[in-house]
Image (tube, rainbow, N blue to C red; front, top):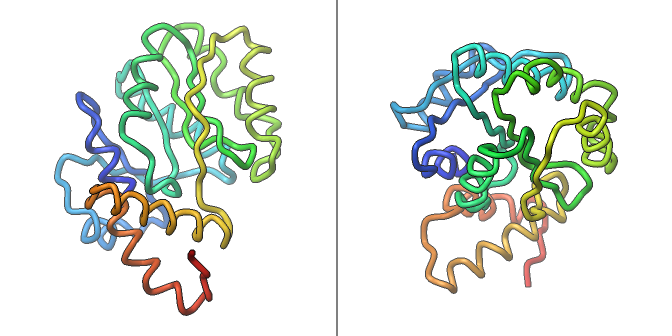
Length: 200
């Protein structure tokens, strides 16, 4: 919910949500009540395949720039996504490096050069490891694509990440931000006693 809300704040962009399994859409639509969002079934055996097929669908529809984020960065500032779209006016690829060695965002420009090779930059990547970002950069360079990076950001993969997110939400509330991460905040209140999250 929070990630969809973040994406929907990006001016001039249309939010698409790739969902799985196939029967999940009705439930997700109840959680994310936004008629402007476009939905499509996520396909692919691994993350690389899923990214390839998502970009393929978006480019086939004629969009000139596409930015993909995961659902595990519920506090990502919308401005980061806007920066990615801006960068794609002058580069082929934008990456948002994650603090764990992966990436929280990838964007591609729909140019002839990108269309000729973008499938390959998702091949031979050891997904869910600290080498994902490094290997992706190597693939981008191999195909002579231009690249720009955003600031590093953290996603949520482990219990320690939940604690970090909870602390960041506390700081946001102290600063007067009442909306960003509000759904995640409610979930963390439920999880805190169950997971014994120690938040200081």
